[in-house]
Image (cartoon, rainbow, N blue to C red):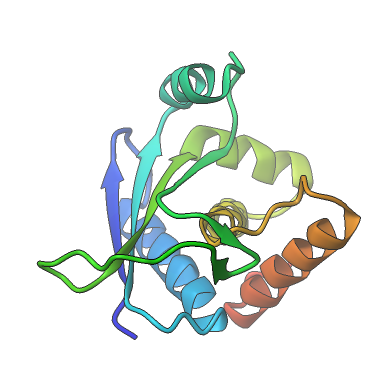
Amino acid sequence: MNHQINIAFETAVPGEAEVRALIEACAKRVLESESTSFDAAVDVTVVDAEAIREANRDFREKDAVTDVLSFPMYEFVNGIPQEELEPEPDTGRVMLGDMLLCYTRAVEQAEEFGHSPARECGYLTTHSVLHLLGYDHERGDADTALMRKKEEDNLSFLGLKRE
């Protein structure tokens, strides 16, 4: 498959090239592990705490900083599309949606959880792409367990295990 991950930085990030490569590798890994039968595209924007707080307030009515937000273009349930997917005419790719990743929150959480910022950014990217594919940890215990297993399997494959 020829997946495209478009990444924009709206905040300064140390090691931006490495973070960009990590996000791209994690997003593509999820799409490959899900055996998507189409070329997909995902837009990722790396933002600061204020930008994600505003988006969280505006779109989820939660006026708080969060780590990652996912905005799917299509309805999926556990990787299965629930509607017809329409590839973009100019690229032939299906735009799955947008992701906002708060790098400052990722670094804070990495410290809280005792692992590297790379592992946390990888986790958040994996988590978000799974959401774009309709996995949801808020649907119940079985769905939570399925999503967590997929997250850990993908991160382990990329060498981003818990430290």
